[in-house]
Amino acid sequence: MPRAADRFAPYEALHGSFSSLDHCAGIPGGFWIEVGGKGDCLRTYSQGLSAADNPTVLVYFTGDVLLKTKEGVRFVGSGYERQSPELIGRDMARWSAQAGSPAIFIARPGMFGSSGDHSQRRELREVMLVDGALDAIKRRYRVSTFILAGQSGGGHIAASLLNRRRDVSAVVLSSALLSVREVTDYWNKRRTVQSASNALYNPIDHLVGIRRDPKPLILVLSDQQDRIVPYATQLTYVRRLQAAGYDPQHIILSAADKSHHALARHGRRAAALIARGEKIDTIRAALAGLSAQPDD
Image (cartoon, rainbow, N blue to C red):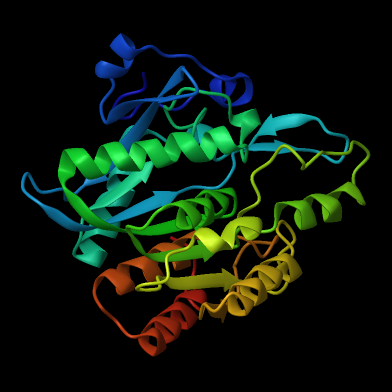
């Protein structure tokens, strides 16, 4: 149970971790969620929540930390063990201040203090666990609507929740994994070890679940040179939304990292501006200006 400045252990992200109802009760921001008779403790890091009603709350989902080499060898990204509850709390405090609304970081199963197995990411159970956590947050803090932001694999979660919930007023998907089979096929052609996608939840296949009255604001942030989640797969999602009668805002940006993939801060900035009621032209201009600035 990392606290304050304690660092997160890569071992748990690599091999999974377990919890119990009693153990979860002692975890700061912990919510015990059961799916299919099996429970996990999802840890949250919140800032700005009121003791009374919270009309709009921002929620952030980070990308994957469990990665693979071309040969299929698993490893945890080096940035993971530099993170701590204290640092995540500071990030959420800044985000909440930018937005003028409460902000919550929900740790996906198996990472950043949540129990579970991160190697089972993108399966329906991961989506259902996070969906259950949002239900619990909504009840406890009397939330009316959520603005979701997700980076890369976290974008997969945000898009999946968009398909399932009626209380999502806006979603920002940055460098997001939205067409799972298309991305899997792309990487299978380039890797020695093949991955299967038939057991994974594919957000692009379930757009019929997105609410229509009123339609949510959907922003898709992409770098056309993305080397992790190919731009073409993000464009497929945008076009599928358009065909289904939605009006996604597809914003092309320039990520500063060598993989042209790191658009997390753009996503959070966009969500903060949405919470403040800014128009889409203002948001586009702000994100373009952010691309010209060095990373934090």
